[in-house]
Amino acid sequence: MNLKKGQSYIDLTIRKWDNTEFGNTLRKMCEAAREYENDQVEVHQVVNLGKRKGEWHYLIILNITQDLDDLGALVENNYR
Image (cartoon, rainbow, N blue to C red; front, side, top):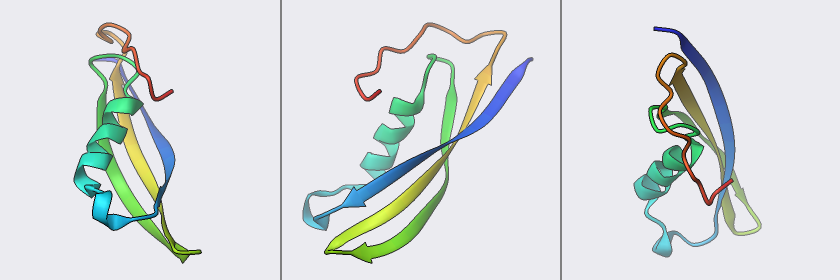
């Protein structure tokens, strides 16, 4: 198995918690980070950067693992 591992960093700003499902948001970020259908993406860390101007700011760190021997089909993503 020929694995390629990397990380991706995403800035997340939350203006209103009433309309936010944090777990669902993280799941969508993992799905959006996939380049190929067999990519494994997991949340490594959520860093709370604090509140500024009434908005909460986070840094989301994702671990991405690709099996270069079996990438699968390219993922069509509307988030990129």
